[in-house]
Image (cartoon, rainbow, N blue to C red; front, side, top):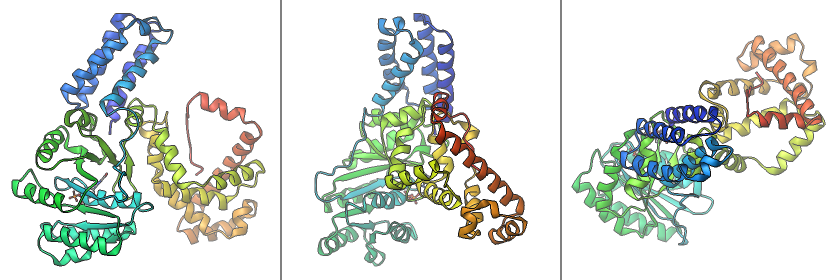
Amino acid sequence: MFDQLTKRLADVFTLMGKKGKLSEENIQDGIRQVKLALLEADVNFKVVKSFISRVEKIALGEKVLKSITPAQQFIKIVHDQLVETMGGEGSVDLDFRKSRLNILLCGLQGSGKTTTAAKIALKFKKDFRFLLVSTDVYRPAAIQQLQVLAKEAGVAFFDEALNIRKPLDIVKKAKKYAEKNGYNGIIVDTAGRLEIDSELMKELLQISKVIDFNEVLFVADSTAGQAIAETVQGFHNSVELTGLVITKFDSDTRGGAALSVREVTGKPVKFTGTGEKIEDLELFYPERVASRILGQGDILSLVENAQEHIDEEDVKKLEKKIKKNKFDLEDFRDQIRKIKKMGSLSKIMEMLPGIKGKQANVDDKELIRIEAIINSMTPFERSNTNILNGSRRKRIATGSGTTVFDVNRMVNKFIDMKKMMKKFSKNPKLLENIGNQGIPNIRMPY
Ligand code: GDP
């Protein structure tokens, strides 16, 4: 998502940056280019209009024209106004004021409601005891789909739903069951609608009244483009929505709809779905998305994600090992496992600034291959790569289903990486220099 927009805006900024000092005309031209880029990205035209008028007002002020770095100032203005368009700073949290978290999910068929139900439960299961409830009695196997996802997320599922024919009865029974069994979070997934249909809307309204929901979230598929806004409005006419979840943020759609939806509907975006796996749900932070659009990389999301999966103590231990040149293949395998927990490597790479297009295309299968190779070694071999002679390498290749060539390549790259680590740990200034130039070329050690 946003790839094209990011590229277009980067071109505009690069051109402006080359000019040094900017004239009013240069800025006007820049604004025109930004406007075109947004329209091309399918941003709603009214949203573009108000965005551009805000940018104009600030960018043509004295401050920008007289500043020493007008192009950077211009980028900052575009960034800040993008943030504004998407709802301002900070994420919009769920309504946690009550000691329970009841959520109703609605939206069109195939938008990702069922997956999102499991994703939310997984994200907050530390804080709430959830019961997942499906009321989709219309689509064959829809209830079972949630059952499977609930199991994967490790949360309870209301299986009585499988034997009840009416959605309203399911919700009533689920409510009683939750009260009796001490669940303080009920997530209700509703039947998908192909389009706004009055019978199903009535049913949704009735369901929404059975339980005191903290949130009624509309799940919007970002690949649907501008049509989202209209559908949100249609739903909101029937049931009071508290916010949106935008799914398929990982797709390569133009992204304009996701950018416009807040301003057009007045409803805050609370989450984005960033993949098919149940871990792929992120809180929506307008400033991070803006930074991502402007090619600054979503460092904050990455940091947050890393914090969730990486223990500070472990990091310290690792630093010590690197300093003492004791980092071995066992440690390396641990790191690979952590990366795998954080999501796919290519996704992590996409979040890093300075890494674009093809460079982000890291093959996740390589990680699996590397892990398999390391798994086939004995612990002693993992700590002492120098003993890896021909016959050992052959055995490792057979054990891991790879070739001796793969094993050689991995071991050689690992040795190179260790040498580099040694160099950096002796002279941290080298790392600073790399930081100044952005991240030019990250290579995996294979
Ligand atoms: P529902 O009909 O609204 O319940 O939609 P589902 O939850 O069944 O999702 C429809 C399809 O979209 C499934 O194949 C999901 O795996 C996929 N899906 C859901 N959310 C996302 C997402 O954020 N990214 C991607 N790539 N796929 C998603």
